[in-house]
Length: 346
Image (cartoon, rainbow, N blue to C red; front, side):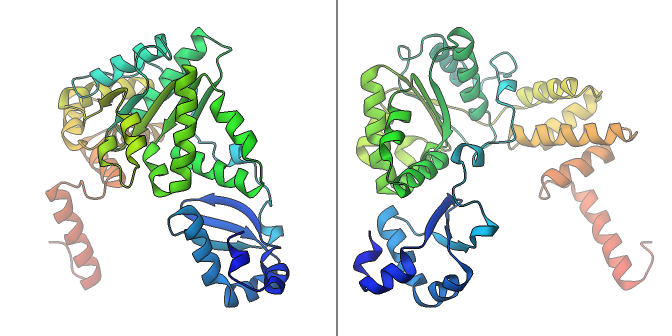
């Protein structure tokens, strides 16, 4: 509709109307068109197509043109968004608590026990890799266990955006409204993603109001508090702040130690207390670093390699290249210089 006013009727009918929406992912819109028409569109119409998308969505995107045989024309949105995580692995019982996350953990348990009555919405925020998604999935699993018939939707801000664009493209927003505005529990990870476009915010605003008026539970996570999400509309910000805000901070040394021991036990590997403390000192950023390191150590042990300080250093340097001890860096520099200059390290 936006493009119709930008070109002649003939140009629209011949070149632009055959364009078919495929998907929207990571700021890229994928459009399907035949190989012959693709060359003309890229040469003649790419600028106005980009402008039209920015005008409708409210933010710039990258356009990729794909040949129908190269990509499914109408991919299933649900399947395309599925993650490789096992959602049933995330429960309150295997969430390790400490001073940095105890408040958010307690709030999540309360919401799971009393959906729609305790804190609505519950807004959990903190940097990536600190356990927000774990709490979100734990709420979902707990409510499912208590009420198997509950209509629960777990999604992300990006997925919500993708679906809305998909339904708009198919002129079928009614089904989208029916899906999201009739659920008992709505769990949205990375809600800050919707701040990129006015149309998305408008849709979520009405979804939020419909669910709130119906007494449905809403739980949101973000990497920052509502007041720092830019450019989030004031009416959404006030609604997000109208429930309970719970922050998740970086884990303390003691909590990191407990997590390392728990993850090592899960993978059935033995790490000495000295090395556990060493890892806790080195891995200070987030819990995903710890999980990644333990998985790599497990792989090494399955190959018969002993877990030593050198093994730990190697694993951590692969997980976080910037987190390499000075002595290891010096050794690496010496080896590289010696190899390139054809002289012994000595």
